[in-house]
Image: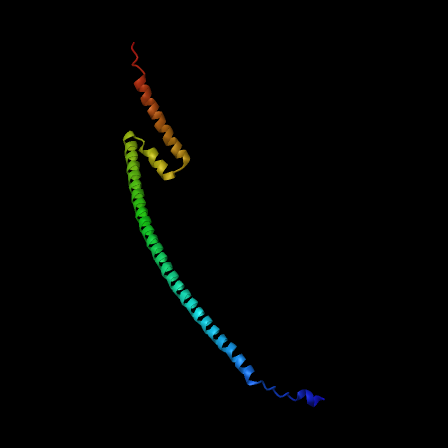
Length: 151
């Protein structure tokens, strides 16, 4: 029994008319596959063109954005330079005003107090300088307001 299972059965001979019937559908299948292949190639070409178009548009947008960023960077650098210049002018002006105030204090004889305030830079020293200025301005105001005593 094992021998009968292992021996191959001989192929059944098909008549010639049956092969011709099978040949017609094979020819149709080949034509259908060729048409399908042509459609696929057309779609691939279309996708390649779409991809190329997309890349071109993307490159254009990237170039535009880079140009815009470059312009913004230049503009910001110009503004930063202007601000630096303005701050330098302010520093110079403030230094000049500080020098003017120092010179005025020297003229008023308050040089020693202002030097102490600069050296120590404590709130107490600043407060003393303000008190001296306030008292000297009050004294100047009293002298102007008080009429001379007539007697």
